Length: 237
Image (cartoon, rainbow, N blue to C red):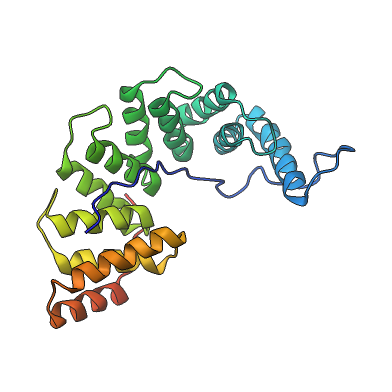
């Protein structure tokens, strides 16, 4: 069994408009269609953000952080994410937590990272719930607590977050944070596998399923597959 907490902090990228109208940015520079689209999106988002739209503020901050449609600027990213987060936008809260955790555009502060992840997760955002699992499972600024990590991974996994599903499956296989349960481990690995991933990650998922099946009875494997087939995602919180 490959044991790991995935070293990935999830971004909630681009919620539904208000800020994605087309055609607001034109110049004579030769740009790819992707670059043109990103610049138009940035210009439109900035207009809505300046009008006080919290969701647009969060997306604008993320575009600064990623360098999408504008040169990368962590300081401006943090400023806009802070504005959106203070207005209660869950993705902005989550992404601001990431910046505090990594010290990008702001002074590194684990306590503030945890605070913003918690605010976002309380609104039901799966990526923030997964990040809390990573914080508690990896001991990022806190004392490791596998029980808390298990609980947060489960919340995110129930919303069909594949990284959380993978980490939850690992915890079930090892009995960390909750009871050891190979049937549930197999189910969650299978659900993560069904969503697709990079080739290396898919190979790891298949290897873990194979490892489990060597230790399970035929009836247990059948039950795991039955549970995976019947499973439906929740809507969060």
